Length: 119
Length: 112
Image (tube, rainbow over all chains, first blue to last red; front, top):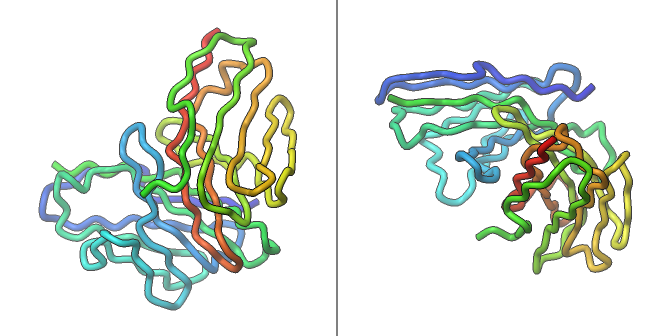
């Protein structure tokens, strides 16, 4: 149980275009989803937190107009990188948490990641 | 600001050796998790510790949460090549649906 998928697994796009990444919880309802960015050989950096049906909360330094997040249902969140540039190239990982797990267990279930390359 | 510092950053050992990875912070966490990540994949949860002084064992892996809930360690006994990966600790603060703060990561390479 607690499987999270991401699509696509990798994408190459041209500078100036927009790219949408999907994150789905396959066998549970994800009340909260998180989007992370990871540079090569580095740890995960949280970009934003999204709760179903409400606006995402962005971390300091993350441009909300550039990284659009939509969490329209309990099983789907999307991250759209708008007007992508080469410096946006990175590994983007989503995770999901369910209210079905009792506190204080705060495990997050991670997707397999999406590698974005902007040329 | 990275709240969780891991050491060592990189560790290369031979199969059969023992090792310990440390995760330290000046902040108190309500719970702490350890993940392992392989190249090109998302992190996979290994364990969650919530009580100060708690020790959990997962086969050859032993996890400990510091008494003050500011630090944690991961000990691997008789490491195997399959243990190779990036090990990440992550802490949660407060109550409710809190976000995780990830450690700096420890890259482990176990050679046959």
